[in-house]
Length: 118
Length: 455
Picture 1 (cartoon, chains in turn yellow, cyan):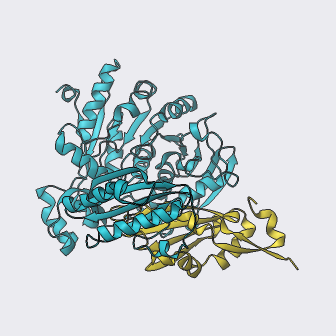
Picture 2: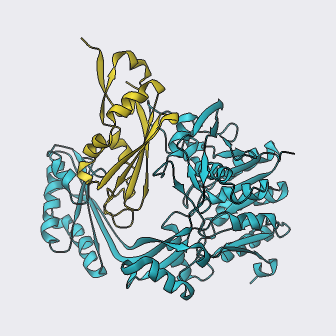
Picture 3: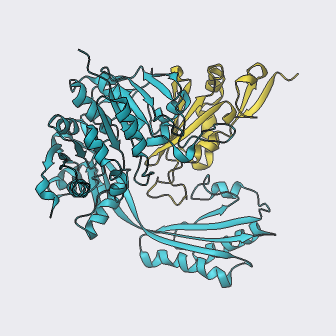
């Protein structure tokens, strides 16, 4: 039986990171409306907190925007103080959307046509 | 009678953006006809503090360093076509920027344009000291303040335009207010028409990062392809009398505008979508929708507004010490092992100086945390081209400089084959935010007379 496939999130959604102070926000936007429900079920606050565990977020909040088939994650205190204090080359955390986009997602085989890339 | 559409083009999304973006936007605005405004957003959170430092060494400076490059190619065309210009490129010295624009206009042989400056954002002076100390609380004690600026809203911009300004030069204003101001002036909305203000605010939000809505910061080959990244078209918002907008870009320009590029920018730097706070309104995009009307044309609807916040946000930038960074490269067999050994040497030599960040560029760098938990999780591998980077913060310059010397000394004392040392030391700025009541931060505009252009 091969009725599901496991793919990285970037095949089902795209994302962009923004920063303000020591807080990062990451949007997750479905490539296709048919993928929205499974993203809501799998890209949860807990899943995102696990993906960013080494950044020790003090809080992960998810906001749903069903009419855009999008969600917005707000991660508190993940930027080592933010652009002014962090020692990271990427003190804004701009690359972090691509850490989230590596999250494995399980997709029913009949929705494979809604995925992008290979 | 319904007023005609207002077109607002954005030709810069930050200080350091491409400076050749404006001409195609201006030509598209001219070709479209009708009322139009050109905006430049050039003032990120830290940019104003840097401008304040620049003004310390040059009292006539402190405004956008690339002002000439941004404006000179399009100033004559805008003045002649009646396209008004609104920007925060005044930074720490709006009057200085206005004078510079007068000089450029004179050099171009133009009749002196009417230039207004928006003032009131700078709260670093004695008049606000007590209020600021109270708002900051104990966190503000003993700060070496570089800049303190309130985020002003759209009203002073709108007033300046209604009074006939052809160019409005601001310091710190909320980025979307660069768009809301012209819309307020053009449509004559009530200043508590929260829904319309919120719609214009989100139009401004889509514009304020320049090409980030039109294909910039979006491409991912094979997944998200964008044509013509080297010649991106910067965005134009067509705003109607209800504040709804359609986002487009100059015909024939590079980039792309579709539902996906617009959604990414709509959520950029947003926290709670139901409460996007600006000085003008609390915008709610929880029920927002985007629709593709045609190639590179997307309409945004469904934005609602709520009463604006009672207080204004203030950013205080202060000196916090020094950032020291050093890098050295290793390549070929066992490169990663040699880079890791060099890191161990530096940790030992710099022990006691404070937390040292270590990155192995080519193995892992930006995903990691400063404390090194992520790096410790990565098993040692056999990467063959690795650049070691170390960094630390220190309050004292002399201590921070020790990192530079120790990285340089790896040339003779470190593992074999290290090359390409680069070191950098720079002052650090910290930012604190607080709120001040509106009544304590009155915004106003005034015209800079042509007389002032020739000091």
